[in-house]
Image (cartoon, rainbow, N blue to C red; front, side, top):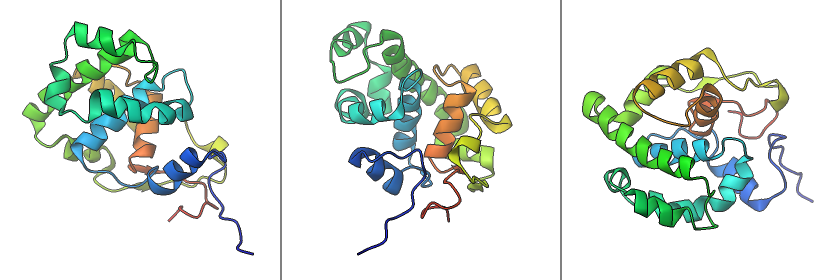
Length: 187
């Protein structure tokens, strides 16, 4: 019999969650479109569980993220009114408007600073921060860095990017390695 794999304790037995944990969460991500999608999805999570967002991610991809950031930035209010009718999305018009607004803010940031992935990764000096996490319950919900990123993103016009959302984003895109110390993916 094969020994079981030790994962972070936040990861449930849901196959979707296991796949996300094992293949995505905490892996360094440098693709601008993928980072944009992740930042927006983290904002969609506000007040909800991440598994709720994961279960709706494919619909978000169909409705938003298979488009270019430029196309999303040009969505009309009517486009968003149609999207809010889709039960496959989190039907919160403010959150859907935030995706469009974040696309507009992303393009402005890109015009000012070039590659946004490079700009984002400067917050961790372009390398993953490896934290000591004996138990996920001891990991912070936000840090000084996520507060700085949040303030800067808000200043640039982003929405649903509070310090907790920014820290979850930093964990998810591999800027921060908060896998539990006994997780098979720690290092």
